[in-house]
Length: 277
Image (cartoon, helix red, strand yellow):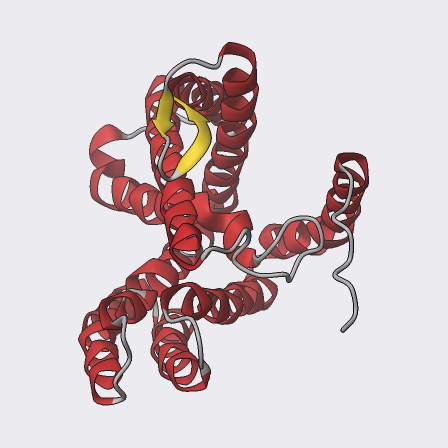
């Protein structure tokens, strides 16, 4: 039997992470910037790859059947969104979620609720991302970048504050390295970045953007903790091995998965009342 490869040093792992970011970052950002078919393709790709990793976490073991069932449900929702809009996609999701549960029950899957959760967890998050970018006219790009940069700022601020200040753990059983100081640092970082983005975009109320970005930071950290919990269930370090040095697609977008639907709801339901953008 061949020996397992030695783990990478921290320096080598950092180098690999940087190289992966430099290779994958530009085409992803280009798709976001261009919108249209390029962004639609990106959303569908994220959905398909996300389902593969979710099934690995939700129903470990033989995965051909649960992957096929989950993929059909998620693709149905995302395709409806891309061709008919977010409203119809939500209706399809409301039907697809219980249907996926029943299919998992009939095929004797052990973790039926988790498999059925692929629809709200992955599909509706993709719908929210697409709605923000494509169904908000000329504001779509700025709104999407507001969300994206707020979540990136959350991760950076939480890491910096956690390492610098330390203190009580946020959820020691799920993620031993996360601290309350990190959460607060992430919220402040996201709020400041959101405020700046709102100023640059000439938003009507940057102060409201400050508050919304802080809320998105909490959602982003919750998404991070949720995925950490899922990985601990099956004793894996990463959700996948798609991105060298980074893990899987879910490892990269776990914060967005929780924050995107919240942001879409805030903007859709209270955007005109707040008149913040």
